[in-house]
Image 1 (tube, rainbow, N blue to C red):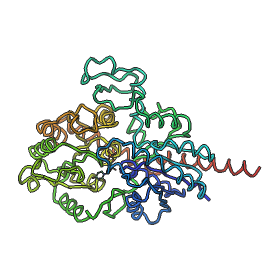
Image 2: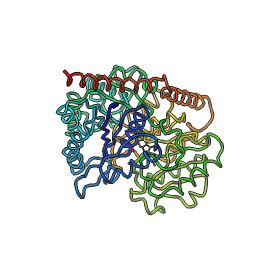
Image 3: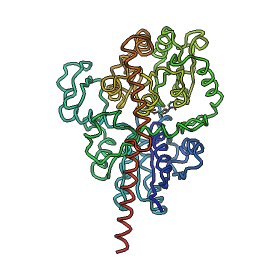
Image 4: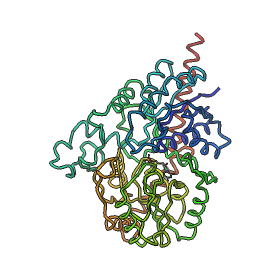
Length: 470
Ligand code: UDP
């Protein structure tokens, strides 16, 4: 039998979606894939598997702590609560029972489960870490820890140069995520388990997306992305793992609306599965999009207390040139629609990869976590993004930089408008997409990355089998 891999994704769409895609990709190459998640999250993963009935991916479920939300999207803010972390840790014993019962040859688990390193070591199988990010953020993090350039900056918003990187990259102190100084316990545990008990990394990225950065990683790493491209032939309109929740008619409405627009004319604005704003900031986004004069599709989270639309949506707003989707959007389908010519994004890693794979230039509006690092990759390294001007990294809505409608309009115009710079950016975006497409094709760098991962796991399995025979 071929190698059998257990996948344990972190309980957030931005981690479950790419790991499900990874499981599907490996299953497509002959590996036996088992996704392990909690009962409530299984209904988010299942639709993505229904779309690929020919693949041998099994779903196993675990019980979570009672009365604790089972997904980051159900937490009041995107920061992890102690209860939620306790819930993640509570999965250890039932996950171990599954290990004993099914005896997989490898665990690919999210870095958010440091205890999977211990279990893998105890059971004598390799643990491979999935980070939900690319490699650029590791180089940025390492440069900050090593050279501490932020300590020399005289003000929080004063840009400083990151030493030791292959490109000129500047950040400011207010854009750094918390926990980088060793003050976050979960992050410390993750780092320790990662350093000591992790065989290697598998990353949803490709060499050309982060030129020169993967080479700086300390562990053995397989770059296998963009994993979302494994869905490019999927014709179903069900959302990939996000929990469409009966929004199919709305998806049809959106795609029909896009069909009526000319090529490259529409801006798609979406801030991931967790992006929240104050009502006044939503009002500025609305105003900026409207005054840009460009058609747009704008996704506004449903669960974020914006129910009173009169507080932020100008009269007649939707009927003008824009479409507002409340809740979940079929992002991959929208981005790959020919009418879409730009993407306003919060720079979550999956959105960066998906925007890059679709070949669209981006308006970058990072909010929290490592999103400000990703912004620099899009803007400074790849030259496919225009920053809207946010400066403060925080998952607390009120703490962030307030971006005016004029800033929104200006950034949209820069990305969607004419002129040499905009044309150059569009050209670069198309080139990156072409490289992404080639990377996952047979013989491409990510295709080969996946082959070498599979081969290594096969070799380990064969070595173990030989050992037990002797
Ligand atoms: N997504 C989607 N529809 C939405 C919002 C998000 O399909 O309305 C998907 C998006 O395509 C991506 C993931 O959810 O695959 C979000 O991951 P990302 O890393 O961009 O951001 P996060 O939600 O983790 O902040």
